[in-house]
Length: 253
Image (cartoon, rainbow, N blue to C red):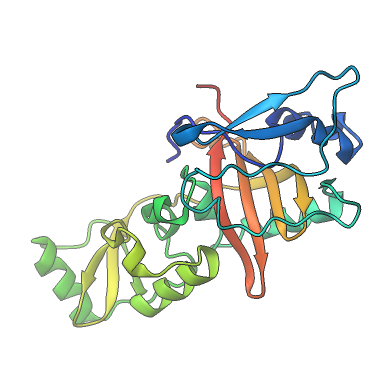
């Protein structure tokens, strides 16, 4: 579940995303510049609208949280950022509905090692396997239980590694794999019991593109928005798909 904490996102003003089509030109975004604020990361400086100096690109601070300073920021062909088209927003909505994607917007993080893997793999992330009788017995013995009280999800270690590489660009050794579930070496897989699914339908309602980097606003579905909030997410397009860079709740603190 997303827990609100203080950090400022890069690339754009949250006000721009929240207003959706309230701004029509990407040049409006250029009235914002990101400045260095030491260990606190980024601040957003709104320049005076009347005759303010405009910037063709955002300034990347040198001292920021893991993940941000390694990005290869690219400008749009016109030398700036552009707003997403409706077609692009629809495609990102389809993307975030995927079982191997939605779990990455259910926690806040500024770098891949901070992602809550319990949320990512809670429902199996599309990799869940059927348990054999031997696996069930081994799981119950390890947990000192007599029976399974809910559904039990199994995800192989190789599938976990595959998803972490594709979606975060990291390996298992860079994470806290205990949140995935109980690892049983005999079967080289993770197991955990889960009740109701944590699946949450989000819709992309706004965003900006800057080369291969996308900053998106996802709106939470009405059924669960009292638990999961709207979020602002940074994705990087790679050869294999989209990689999650950071995620922030837009809930009022």
